[in-house]
Structures are given as C-alpha cells and as structure tokens.
Length: 111
Image 1 (cartoon, rainbow, N blue to C red):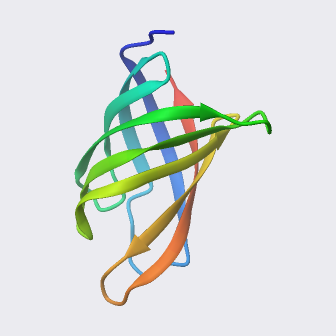
Image 2: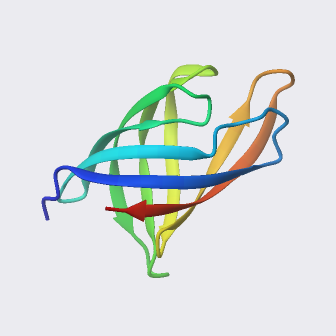
Image 3: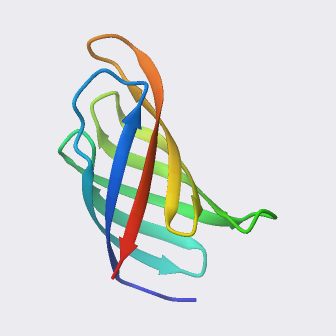
C-alpha cells in the first residue's frame, strides 16, 4: 500500500522524566508497503527525521522499528513504537539533568 504523504498530529504525555517536554507533534510521513520515512516536531522542540519498517502483531497492533535523528542524546537513535487504534507507546530517555528512562504515551490524529 502506498500512502505518500500522510499528515498527522500527535498529543503525548511523558512519564518518568524530569524535564518539561513538548506534547504537540505535527507529523508528515510517506509509507510504501510497510517502509516508512517522515519528519515530526519532537519532544525537545526540534525537527526529527526517521526511517523504519512497520510490523504487524498477533495482538491487532503494529510495531514500528527504525532510526530517528533530532534528539540531544544521540545524533541517530533507535526508533521503537507500538501502535493500536491511533494510541501509541514508546520508550523515552533524557540525559539532563540526570540520565533517566521513561515512556511516552500518545494519541495520533490522522488527516
């Protein structure tokens, strides 16, 4: 299936982290079969670009796996997101003021 370009807006909540993160994420994506590339305004208030692949699961959910740029902790970071009915969860981490691991939960409105 080809759906190049799709637009979306995600609203997120960051759990287990200390900093004040952006929770509104405009998002543009190109999907060809199960391969994805896109850009979005990330939690650190910069633009991230990503590429990855969508896997279907037996739980009627999807898993996105790939790489992403635009975060202060690494020039290129792993991308991992579990999605069901436009809800998603993804691991999160911060390096300042202290190293912490958390999660980001969100809902994506697709246009």
